[in-house]
Image (cartoon, rainbow, N blue to C red):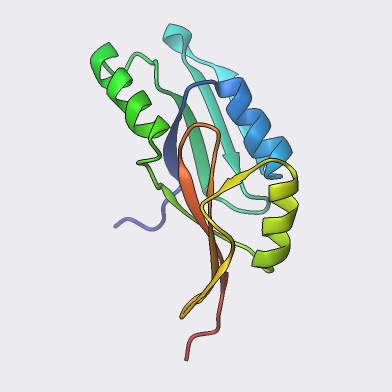
Length: 137
């Protein structure tokens, strides 16, 4: 029986820039950063205090054909991938803080039936919802 999700992968074009963005801009924890076989680098980050890790996987790796890597780069650059959602305690304050750090957003925070939501984009085209959840009854 599956009991939890431990890792999720996002594609990046530059692991050092991705590490900088997720750790220094968003304030995530660096979980792992070490070399492996075949010039592969295991690089994972996580929101502070969380178990789930985001694998910052380079598009150019030995698991993906060059043709598919080019397709992924194109789609990612077009903002096609929306790999998940994060939670915040104060959506509007988080928006202002991250906007001041240069993070891109698809509009300002909006009230939704489930809480206040904004959509941010990382430098590689991946977009994430960031939600301040509303208590649901």
